Figure 1 (cartoon, helix red, strand yellow):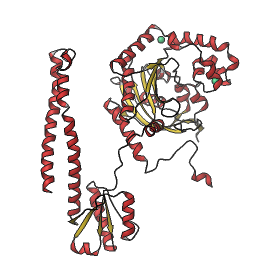
Figure 2 (tube, rainbow, N blue to C red; figure 1 turned 90 degrees about the vertical axis):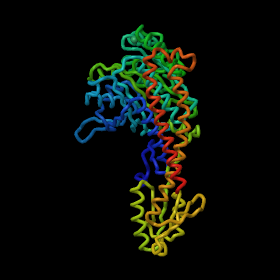
Figure 3 (cartoon, helix red, strand yellow; figure 1 turned 180 degrees about the vertical axis):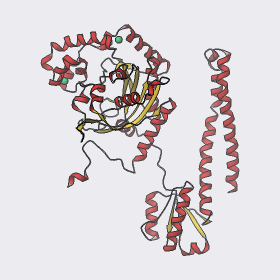
Figure 4 (spheres, helix red, strand yellow; figure 1 turned 135 degrees about the vertical axis):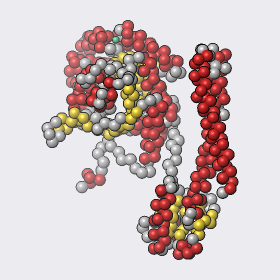
Length: 495
Ligand SMILES: [Zn+2]
Ligand SMILES: [Zn+2]
């Protein structure tokens, strides 16, 4: 019986007290992707097994050793997705996403499944934030998704990570490389594991990311793909580096990155952090120009990345990242007596409909026990409503942080008082916003080319004219907000 009250090894529950962290991470990821033009896709957690054997590759560790595969009642072989790219491409082909203007940008936050040995940050059910950019052959696209991954990590408050990039070529130059690899491993066969002996014929590059120590040892001195790139692939890689330099994204070229999935071509990259003990990858991705064709779709050069959120959050914890505090209950209504319970239930509905988080007693407890509960909830304000309050129609709202009490009528006094509190909060936030508008003058100067000698900014008058417009609008909006603040502070004073 103990089995049914234990979650499966390598999985974890998310509790109400922790979920705000996940919500913050997910919101930040999706919002950063949105700023780069990505719309969210959601696909089923299970697919036909063949999608992964053909998409991810049947000689990869992921497919050979880690996939959860089962036969359903209709005798079909299905698998829980071990990653999202194959599903995303399947989805794009099925719905004709790529038949319209290209590129198409899709992002996701998705649970994925791999039967790996569980360890810190490596779960059997894990969550990936990822993006896929379909129909974008240019190296500028490689640089853009790398910068999106970089921006996401920065927005999450992570620092101290590094970016490693490599090119693993195209089918043309890889044929030559495979020949060199075969020659190299052929002479060291006795050191390879069973699986890699088979890989030697079918896909020798997979030996390089085999996790068996013996294979890793041999692979260390194997020929490197980067020395075999054809002219096109070399030029593509040089351009990617040029764009990254221009975007101020620092990187190192690491020729040993091959990524453990078969679909990659040309650019591959990993974001690595040392905050999890050993160096570990928190985000990995690259180009997969042949995958659409391989899955029966039209030729669609594409690329993407996946970010392991469990690992990212471990790094955030290690770096003591500041998660925004979850919102606590705003007001707790404590009823004494049956009639008061009825009134508090009605008041709670009314308050919630106005957008205030409100709670009341559901367990028939004493006022003292209720106050203890309100404290546990972290309620910012409490109101006790008993016979006396019902008779007079007047209650006292208690600020739990300061102990200060304010006398108001039950209706509409409680709602009005909460609105006043809300207005004061909004004012504080608006004041912060106004402070950031002071930076607009600098932005305006930069865009009109007055800064830094103005050479690059003032390419021609036309472009300067185009860029002026949004700043003017922003300034106007800044003005509007300032007026709003004035109005609010007036009404704030009145109240
Ligand atoms: Zn090539
Ligand atoms: Zn091996």
